[in-house]
Image (cartoon, rainbow, N blue to C red; front, side, top):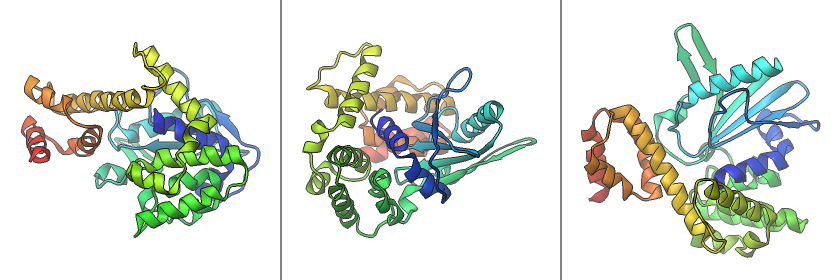
Length: 296
């Protein structure tokens, strides 16, 4: 939920920045469309629809390439729903956030008999950071961009954030930058270049925390403010675990109890790594070999 809320906030607060960067065009009359279309809304990492005068920009941010249903089918489903409702040009862009060698991040179309649907794919770690450094709303994404010196890039982003004149904007962008930078940087390094105090002072941080707490309560999880972040991390791990087990079950069939217990012990980072490679598994032996590899 942390990344979802962060990216949703950035796109909805700075839609012009994203349209300028992704479509190379200027637009001022922008409408944020509801992310639930017709029946059975699809769960995704972060989905936003921006409607301009002549088209809809559908943005989908993904931290992991694996999903259920699979991403290409989901993009086709969204296109059909959007086109049926708005009957206009639709530009769909999937932005992968976390570096991976998974073949899934290179797929940019859905193909079936008599049907082919294309969409754009951006692997943010391959992108030039310079355009991202020019707009406040894109600064958090700049921490994930291509660089030969990650620490220098993080420092450069920190400098740009510090130059934002309006204090509330600076705090919000700082918080979003720290949260997204956490995908690739250690917390200690992030704290060197971005003010930790911005976290608790920022309205967006409180909003993200509150939404996380509300979701936790809806699932029967009682969370206190002081324990919110720690429990949020564990909640994220459990959500990732459920997703990985669901994907493994669809891929391999039922998982035996011994392997299930070993999966329960994996960290969030290990579960994310497993989510990237499990699409290549053909039997339980592949899963067991992978688990043995990370334990050695």
